[in-house]
Image (cartoon, rainbow, N blue to C red; front, top):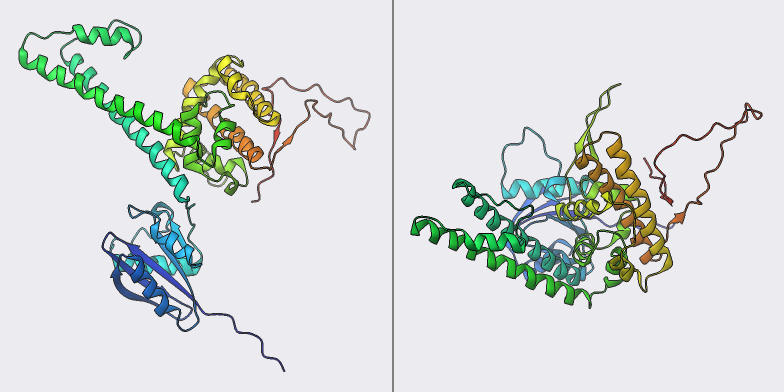
Length: 411
């Protein structure tokens, strides 16, 4: 009788990674134990793997995403070793667990990995991460610029100085700031220093935007960036930010998953027969959520292909241009319908932003070679087998539905 081949033994290793040390815990089918600490270097990790796999076991590693980045994960995967990185916010925790140490964190990771209760995050390649660093550097510069401008407004408001114009930080507003004078030299010096502090982040934003436009030209995801730029409200910065943060759109099987990833789905608190939906979750990628809401403001106006958008359409596939125009027709009508229904403008814009994510997903699928099906413009009439002679009722007036047909989600 032939003996069946034995399955390899599995070892699940939890790593609590820090700048200098790594706490290691091991879980297998028999026990869960702490291994101790090792130096936070790749050669120390190689020695650990050699020691754990010398008996023929398959070793799987996991650690939390943090300031140490993805260097360890890339190193292990480069050697063909399974390694996952999980988000700290997605790790199950007991409410009664009030003790946190490196050893306990490593043990928790190993135990949850063995139980299959951890969800790994997407690891970008080095080129995508480099563009993402540039995008996030620009975002930090914009935040610094906003804070500096707010300090100037607060300083003027404290002394009753108010600008009579409509828009701030325009040429007229800057001319007004140059004419502001205070009675005491100390106040004038403090005000001039606040004005000088605005120049550094403003120049930094310009430099980073120029560098971003140059680096994207040599990026492998340039076709996807150009495809997203066909949409209204998506210039180079917004499109580049979305592609840099999301990376591979194919990991989202349905647009609702992408909507949930950026935190635009409504929160819910339901129990029994009661169902209550609240504000959006605001969970996930905040940079993408901010960019999509900024783009949604453009859909307050009637659908129109401006010369700038028409220039972006040049050289793009016909399917992408059709999806971009369908997005305008759908979302502009959607916003007007919600406003007429007495919805707050911010609520209407959030709803438009959520639906805009679906069109982003559709364009990404087209660029990746997996186009979505297009719904024919004619609405099919409903028939009933119970009453075939009954005339079909007239359809109710509503917002025109999207022509995109998305695959069904599996519950």
